[in-house]
Length: 163
Image (tube, rainbow, N blue to C red; front, side):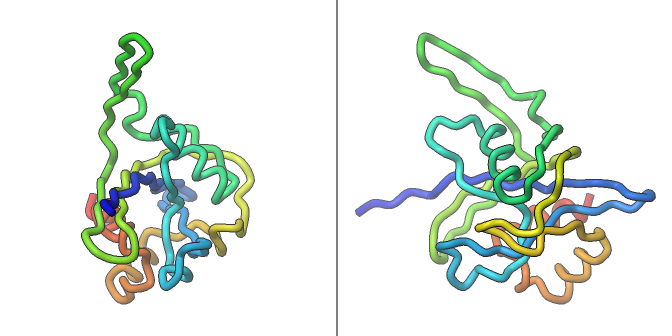
């Protein structure tokens, strides 16, 4: 039986406190996570059928962290067309990552999110230890212990740290 990759979204959510930049990370704890549970990740999840990708990102962030995304970089540049009952959008994510082997096939659209509001949860049914991490600390983890980070998020985080 032919299988297809699952489209997903992820959010690199930034905040600045006292001129120091942080991003939101969490410990992965998915029902179907198997050996990936316990790894660090950014908020992420699957896109529902016909769900607008930006709405999917907002929904996943809310479900996993309690926060409401108020700014997604690139959302204002999406192109939308409606012909009859058919609507399509085009967009440019920050980074697209595809795993080519492993437990399940995913194509991950990662977006930079400049603003979020609300009360941060500490854990949900999909994530634990939700917290803000200093950029310098994240750099150390990526350099010294990359195996602690969910593989599908490493490339986007490395790209983020290089800019």
